[in-house]
Amino acid sequence: MQTFNFKACAAAVLLPLFSHAAAADDAAPVRIGFMLPATGTYAALGNMIENGFKLYVAEQGGRLGGRTIHYFKVDDESDPSKATENVNKLVKRDQVDVLVGSVHSGVALAMAKVARETNTLLIVPNAGAEAITGAMCAKNIFRTSFTNWQPAFAMGKVAAERGHKKAITITWNYAAGNESAKGFADGFEKSGGKVEKAMNVPFPSVEFQALLTEIAAQKPDAVYAFFAGGGAVKFVKDYVAAGLNKTIPLYGPGFLTDGTLDAQGAAAQGIYTTLHYADNLNTPRDNAFRLAFVKAYKSNADVYAVQGYDAAQLLAAGLKAAGGDLTKRPQMIDAMEKTRIDSPRGSYRMSASHNPVQDIYLRQVRGNVNEVRGTAIKALADPGLGCKM
Ligand code: PHB
Image (cartoon, rainbow, N blue to C red; front, side, top):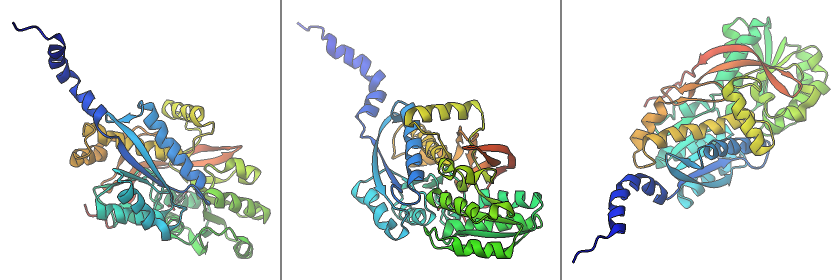
């Protein structure tokens, strides 16, 4: 006599219902490779990016597109000469599915090259090197930050509108610094100003004294400086110590004063910068993000935290569209290209070359806050020069 097997029957009925969840549970975690600086002048920036990324994943219950996430990490030391070897540790040794990095443009350019050669998905959460979403652009390469040109061009326009005619730029001599100085000159000269001299020091040197003496002798109307992290702290303090702030206003992209104000203290007061983020946007989205961030990490979010958070949001959009299946690359990419990122900075979409089209705010330092003073340029897209996809 045939007996009724309740267990088998229940399984037969219930399994199809749960098969999707079961498959997602059983699937191996998505392997994320963070290639960020944990040491050197950009160490704090790398930490903020990682924390921002992990905050978004935690808010989704630890899963993106139904898949759990496993993190791998390499300290890239912001050293381009070690970058290819470092990125290969993640791609070849750790077999990551997605690369996230880096802060330094020279390091990120090496990552982009490896990502292209190995067809690994790369999300750049900071480095602004223009080639990444320009000449080197690719279907598998996205950026959730900026190009070096974007905030710089906006600052050039604002500086000219503030009545300055002659400026000097000063920066580290590498892709980010040079592109930032060029972006400033582009905006400044289009609006009637003239950059009289482009100064630089090697990265990551903080020996600014000789150049500050030269600036004092040249007496420009304004100085535009690209420095970030530890170097930005030192530069802003040295500028004040040399007494230059009394006669020559200092401007920069927001990196000059973002995540650095506690250390810069009085020296940073009143400085105007332009960036795709500010500390008091006071939107419900940003307030919720900042509250969650400070609760999780006991420190205030900055632009780097936002860019890391958005890198996770972008990946989530792709994984969701692919049902967590990384082999569905075309569906993933298509969704990542089309999604609007609900960013703490304000919602934005990707350009055709996979770089944010975003508002650039004018900010001014008050206390330990980069306060919004208005929008310098709305929905600014990088020209994406040379990108053919
Ligand atoms: C870069 O190298 O592209 C870079 C580094 C630090 C910043 C911004 C850009 O804050």
